[in-house]
Image 1 (cartoon, helix red, strand yellow):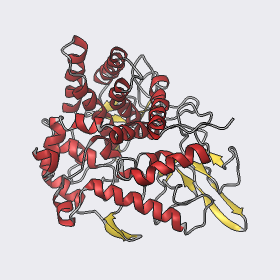
Image 2 (tube, rainbow, N blue to C red):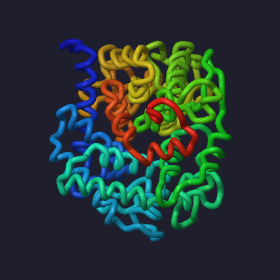
Image 3 (tube, rainbow, N blue to C red):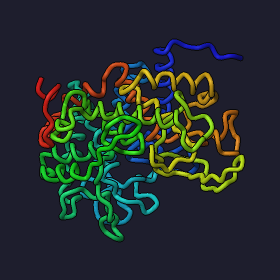
Image 4 (cartoon, rainbow, N blue to C red):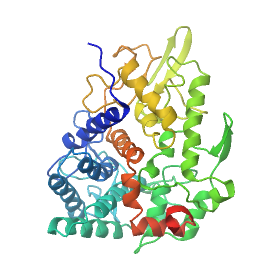
Amino acid sequence: MHKKKLTMDAELEQLQLDTFKYFLHETNLANGLVLDKTAKNWPCSIAATGLALASYPVGIKRGFISRKEAVARVLTTLRFFWNSPQGPEPDATGYKGFYYHFLDMKTGRRAWQCELSTVDSSFLIAGMLTASIYFDHQTADEVEIRTLADALYRRVDWQWAQNQAETITHGWKPESGFLPYRWEGYNEAMLLYTLGLGSPTFPLPANSYEAWVSTYKWENNFGYEYLYAGSLFIHHLSHIWIDFRKIQDPYMRDKGIDYFENSRRATYVQQQYAIQNPLKFVGYGECCWGITASDGPGPDTLKVEGIERIFYNYIARGVPYGPDDGTVAPWASITSLPFAPEIALPVLDHYIYKLKLKEGHVYGFKATFNQTHPEKNHHCGWVSPWYYGINIGPILLMTENYRSGLIWELMRHCPYIIKGLQRAGFKGGWLED
């Protein structure tokens, strides 16, 4: 039966409900941990858990969950992280206030010998702080939410994570120490540096932010001058929490734009790349773009219509330099709504009504699809079998920022975000209102 087209507002409401159901059903109610991906025996992602914490205020606002139930979920999560084992032991939950990237869904202990992740811990902490601002009633439970979120943030030792250098390391392992990689070049670490600079207990020095910015690359692609990052998610994730409209650090003051405008330009670069489609993938165009770090149909090298194609599995796809194998992530284009609704809304329509990528999918859109890969598990081509919490959360939250600005408004009242931005040299806009 042909699906009746909803109004755009109704479509966005339905999409938010679908995505919120992921957090309703893929959370362990005993500890608040959220499943990283809907595969069998898969662990928790601490970033997805942070996104869930930020999503509960949206769920309350939209009538998807009662305040009472949301309070219970948030409190369970915060109590778990406060009481979970912190230490150098290889099976702890965290160390120095940071947490392991993946945790066992039941025990909450480190999974897969993964790293203590500085950036994923930042998304978790940002979710906690969102909850602490939103739940402002004087009930015992909401007071405890605020107290625990504050204590958890204060426990993070950002200075330790520098490992005696200016920039921040990606993480640490008990078996081998700090990872060799650092947060350098424009990336999703803007939130990490903001939180680190704003810390009242272990603050990053101002030169840490300056050292990060010194590694930026300003480029011109498809006629747009912008601060380059290839994967679209980089231009989104910190913006979930921070409203960068009309506030500028010294770097952006020199360029005459702000980070919000930068993300708008990066969105248009994505669309232009898809329109020009230099590698001639099936389906790319004005209403089909969104290339980012994501799941994929590979690894495979296959000859498709006489052309040898390399297909990847999970990899940081990017524009315009690649890698690109024809895989598109619906969540990345939809999360562009606040920056460029005039080109993102038609993409949403295309995915829903033309490609029918939501049909039969309980949480909205699966992670990715690829119309070039010869394996066809959907009428439009290959579609990822999985949902990922770190894809679901940004759809819900950035759609809400587009519709009402809720998360931005909440975080404009977070003293730690304000202090962090000011120490990074941001001025103007709401910071000075």
